[in-house]
Image 1 (spheres, rainbow, N blue to C red):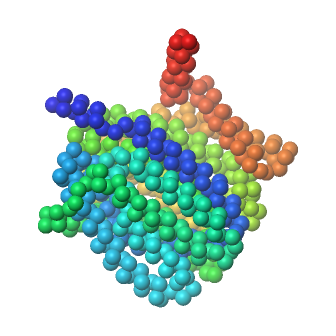
Image 2: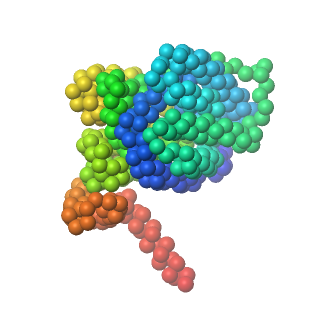
Length: 498
């Protein structure tokens, strides 16, 4: 039995390699907005950005309904069945057929939305491609197999094509519809391109043996938290559009503030996504000791990143927004102050959800928590948005995420203890506060000398990272000491070799 497990573990994809693949793509994702956002924010303006944000938020409800939770459910099931090729193929085709059917139904309903809409009908028509793309999205299959290299190559190619087309064709505010169309089309073509890799892993389906509806109940369990989550990730934008009427500038400000936060979460979310498939495999194999060990390492890594990113995002906002987006986007600065804690809070909840609750079969319990959190967010939106507009939506999201994180930690208490968060977190908090002081001081000094600009922001980021790292070394943080010792050993080994 031990030989069997050892053999399988040797053949399993490398977590470090998969995280490297994801890291390369996520770095590109982080760099892309530095190329496109300053251009788009000035070409489209706050109103144009707001219209794009509002219309996209509407189609996302239908996209979520079309997916019906098949992405998370499918990845887990594929991860658990990847050692059985026959079962793997049958699972893929059953889940894919179910997704295609729900997408067709949602498309019919979407045609009704287009028909009844007057002002935004052209944008909704273009966004139909976003809905169709759901049926062709099979990234969940490759995620379950931990074949992240294929996903990354495809995503990077699509992103490069999208960037090139953006600069070629989007020139004025009148190109907003074209921009919406290009974004939707590249997403659709990117999903279709993944099918070229499929034949390496799955054969032709035997239609007579497929039972797609046997997965309906389980996918619905995954669908409930997904649609509930959309209340505070998408409905915020929709409700802002309702309360502000024709003026969509608040949507534009909110879009960019939350976009910067979401970009900042990428490194953490990428790590959790990579670990999710492995944890599903370990839960299926009943290897509890290894699960506990990996959870501790994951929590250590997540806190190592989440604390400085949260404080650093708030620290650079005042100097970053004016030169990056333009002077008319100054309201985004205060929104970033409010939204910054989401990096830390969501980082924790995503770690617990992706690595404990979903792989461990506790999706139903986590669903109830998410539904309750969505209710909290919706009620707070009703109270705060009319009075504080985008700031109210941001505050409501932070409170709702805190609510969910607290209950997620309670559900995962068998693997994550509050003492674990304190054990791995207190040094990072002290180092992060030292970093925040350095970032703010450096920003003020450089702004006085040279004004705001890219050089100031990059100096703040580099200076903050150096202060954070040195502070952790002084505090003898085990994580960074481990890496420092590894680097020193390799350097000394090379010197001896020479």
